[in-house]
Picture 1 (tube, one colour):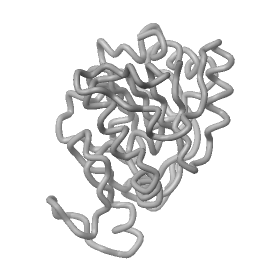
Picture 2 (picture 1 turned 180 degrees about the horizontal axis):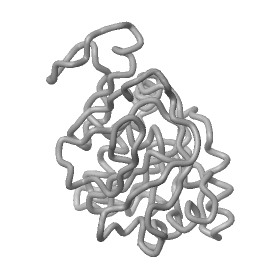
Picture 3 (picture 1 turned 45 degrees about the horizontal axis):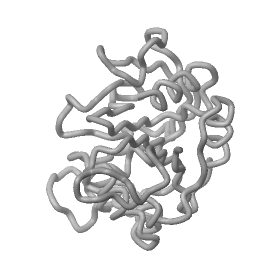
Length: 223
């Protein structure tokens, strides 16, 4: 059974519909208590064996919702135990240490690295930060080629440089580039998917990307 995290973000119905088309059992988690993980990494008290964390929206607002609801700590524990996890769109970005989103909107210089009070903290699971695309033409909306790295399990069996559907103004920049599973280009070449153990996340929306998106979701559910 797959848990889909509902913390007030949009786009959740599309994910559930895609999983239904694949014939994969899934439901919304009733709360963070359903994601409880024991110290040895098992999830005996949870009815779920996988989590999908979808959504779109503002980084700071989403992060605050996760903390208020208790999902932030539950997701950290789940991923620390290397339980299967798939983040989509904001579900990728929130895995990182910081985002420039709020700082940029208030005109703050974000060029310096480090623990900055003007940067919004994320879940801190993948070292790195979320940056705004350079240039004026943002957000990126629509289909874009996505170049998967060799050996990626998410993209197994998919055509090379498949097109996926994107909508975002910010992109993830991991400190360790070996976690990057795919790249796309929009003003800059950037990381559009990550894989690390049983942790996976994508910047695009597979549930809105036609046959290749469904195949990617099926790849992940079969891991």
